[in-house]
Every structure is written in C-alpha cells, then in structure tokens.
Image 1 (cartoon, rainbow, N blue to C red):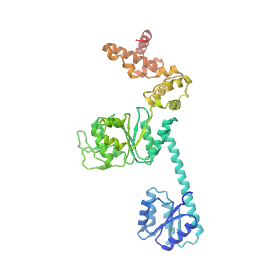
Image 2 (cartoon, one colour; image 1 turned 120 degrees about the vertical axis):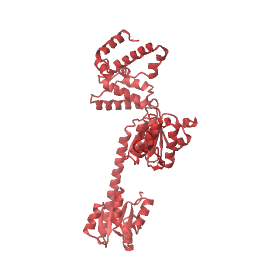
Image 3 (cartoon, rainbow, N blue to C red; image 1 turned 90 degrees about the horizontal axis):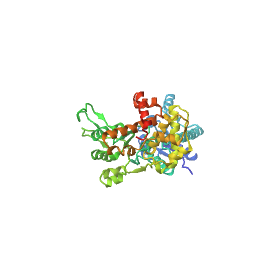
Image 4 (cartoon, rainbow, N blue to C red; image 1 turned 45 degrees about the vertical axis):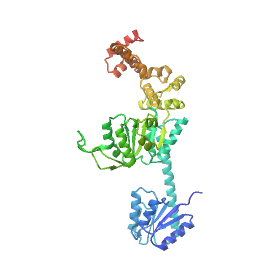
Length: 458
C-alpha cells in the first residue's frame, strides 16, 4: 500500500492544531505539527518534505507569508493552504499572489470546505508530480538518443549513464577514440539536476601544460607576462554545472596534482593567488587509455586515479557492438540527408554487409564521417559497396608505409599521386568539384587526371 500523504500543520494555537489534526486523521492523512517558523525550517531541512502545508500567517517568531515567499523563492512545489485568525481581503490576495493554494480564516466554520480544499490541493500536487516525472522521462529519452545502440554492451552503458546522472559522484569514462565519450558525459549532465547549469568540455591533450593550468584554474592580474586582468578558469565558469575533462591521462603531473587538490578539498587556486576559491562542480573524466594500468606503471597519479574512479563506464568499440552498425548507419544517413535537404539515400544490402565486416579502428566517428562524405558527394539514391570504397579514407599507416624508404623526390611524387587519387574519388570524378575542394586551377586538375589515367598505379 502507498504511504499516506503527509500534511504539516504550522500553527501556534493548540486548539487549532488539534482541530486540524483530527480532521486530517479522519480523512486518512498522516499529520505532523509545529508551532513556530523556526521549528518549521528545522523540520523542513532535516526531514522528508510534506505533501501539503497548512500555514498560519501570525507565528510567534515570524510571518507565515514570509515563510511561503521563501519556499517559493527556493522553487519548492509543495502546496500551501494559508490560515489566519485575522483574515482580510488584502492578506488573502497577497497569499494567493505568493502561490498559496487556498486561504481560510479562523474559526473554521465550514469543515467540509476545508476537507475539500485539502483533497484538491493534494490531488493537484499529485498531478503536477506525475507531469514532472513524465517530462523527465521524455527529456531522458531525447538525451539518450545521441547514444545510439540496441546491443547488450550499449544497453549496459545507457543504464550506467542513467544511474550516474542520479548521483553527484565523479565519473570516469574509458574507451577508444570515437566511441562517444563526450556524448556520454553530456548525457549524464543533461539527465542530472545540474542540466540547467553549464556543461564545459575541455580536452586536456589539446593544450600545453601552462595554458591548461591557466584555462582550468584561472589567473590573477600580473601573474605572468600578458596577464593584464584577473580571469576566471573553467572550474569557476562551470559553477553549479559539469566540467568534462577529456583525455585526462594526457595532463602533466603538475596539473594532475592541482586537479587532485581540487577534487579532495573542493577548492582551487588561480595562478598567482594564495587564497582558495570554493567551487560546486560535477567532474567527469575521460581517457582512451587503461588508466588503472597507467597508474600502476607510474604514468598517472595513483591517488588521483583512486579519487576519480568512483563510477567507471567503459564505452565499447564499434567492433564489439557490430549489431548496432545498421542502426547507426541509417541514423547518420537520415541526419545528413535532412541537414543537406537532399532526397533520402539508402544502403544496398551488400553495402550493409560490407559495413558489418569492417574493423572500424576510428569507431563510430569513422562511420559517421564516411556516411557524411557519401551524402555530400554521392549523386545516386542507392549506395553500393563500390560507392563506400570510393569514399573511404585510406588508413594512415597504409598511405605512409613506403614514404620513408625512398628519396625525398620519390616520396613527394608518391604522396602527390595518392593525394590526387583520393581527391578524385572524393569528388566522384567531377573535375570542377575537385578544383573547388583542392583550391587548384581547373587546368591543373585536368592535367593530373590525364596523368592518373596514363599511370593508374604510380
């Protein structure tokens, strides 16, 4: 059986409290009572919130309407019925403006009307709660659409993302490049109660040590050459929200030490500042390395690893969730066709089989980039295997395997030959498009096309 709705009576008059308690118990509600504003706030802050508040206007230590105003300013949705022995039209109007559900004066002449108002307030509160839950579910479904996958590994990831969003714990995302770590981090943020605050992603590998430290923690005016004004870092910019530190394994030992202190103490120091600054930020970390192994090998701070490894989520590579490839491929095709405002394209069954057989070292990002190229350059509605091969990027290792085994002149010619082969494939054989993509004169493109025809292999 569900718990009884709890009604909290805030009234300093003993007779009034006993009367309301009797009415509430008769109607099957749980009841609690306090006599002062201070007692109300003490109870409100340390116990489960009530489902309804019956609030007297005149309290020994304060104004009941001020209590109501503060509740609403804090965003509390709890319905409040205001009661007073000194009823006036102005007071009633003020109470309703502040968000009271109803207003009654003492002595209570119509008990039936009070009972009805209490039931209506609780029912309205129930409907609002249900509406909020449904909106949260809809929001959650929309957020998780970016993490596409019906395979068991991805369903496990989605479940962990949902659970992580309900906590304030640090999260460590591990996975190869292109598996969607930033999408997972943003989903955790968007599903959390911090979603209306900033989400700031930082790639630790993209910034040199000194710049990364200044970007994260900020700096004081005059802290170094060029520091012409005090500047807040991303820890401060993300206040109340989420800071996503991608490629944390690439951060220098010095920056790792400062992040550890921030995690442990909840404070940071701007560069050039000696006083700490408190922050309230959810931290999500990501790496394409095995951070536990890195820590064991002394390549990453063990103490930092243990502090951030609270909730670990491993993003599976695409080769371990091949069943999701057709779903992902069709999603990207629809997305890019819609964005380009072109007729919808479809994959030939053989093309789907080809995608399923590929190794995908670049994971979902590689698949996405291939299909974006296909939509942009392929003129036909159906996409066959040979079309996919035409627009594929050659692996970097294959492109460069011979370049250092020959003279500079030979390497230059080999590279130039590969470049124009790929350019013509990307332009689907269209010289004008090839000229536009490369920035070369059309006459040069025709000359290179002639060379390729005469020497297709070299």
